Length: 347
Image 1 (tube, rainbow, N blue to C red):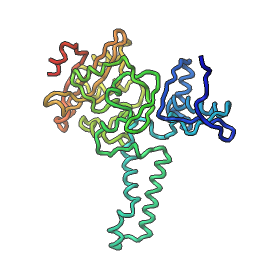
Image 2 (image 1 turned 180 degrees about the vertical axis):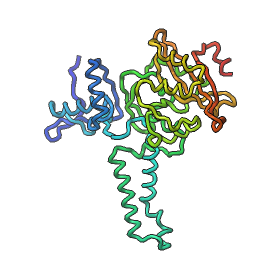
Image 3 (image 1 turned 90 degrees about the vertical axis):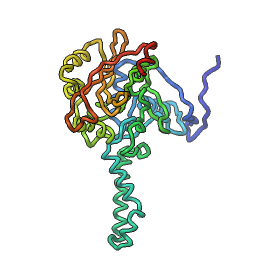
């Protein structure tokens, strides 16, 4: 058995500098006491100097330890160390922030003042001050950690904005292990999808399409002006755009009170409150049926942990005469479609 050797590198100012290839990735998996993991997670979420994920914190400690204790450095920063502040990976950029940035970019371009200058409506000094002011706004947003390269136009569909991945990733159960993947040309650190979880097939088999995933995390834990406009636009179809909930353990129950048909409320609450049932996510969905695609529904995705079965509770109540084109009373619990009946179900 050969002895372990350091990767290729060179001596630089008393340190051994390892050549880092960001295209070559590997995985480290180890078990650790829960309290240690919780402490590292606390650092990730509260101290931007260490990044914003467990992977980032651990990588920074490893890199710092190698440098301080063993005089080993790297020729570039490992991609797992992410110091972006203000916006987490995968989080929709608030509509107000994007609008502020877009307006500042417009105002920073001298060509946009051509007509006013030539007409004598504005002086050259006033133009230069407006440009400087706009650039100060842009610089302030960059200092807060926002990356304009990740911004998408306010009017585009959210399907282009899922920084974490596809709808399949969004609805799937996640493991405790982090992974770094390329999404839209950007490296994203996220929890790995559990490889054995394929309950997303129930969505396709039953004709359930995700419109807006994880409503609480992406919208209802935030105030109206903090959200991506896409979510407000979709929630507006149900007169829900002004709702916001605290994360107090009862928020799903509140949403059931708000949106579930009255005669189904207690039954749904009883179902999701069972010790054997776990709510995996709450999404906004549509049903892929002729004449039905315009309507929006709440979907509670739930797992029965005793037998590893999954149910999607899809419902909506009457949202008033102004929303008859996008909302109607509906209730159905969807389950696994057996292989032999899938073709018939989708017909």
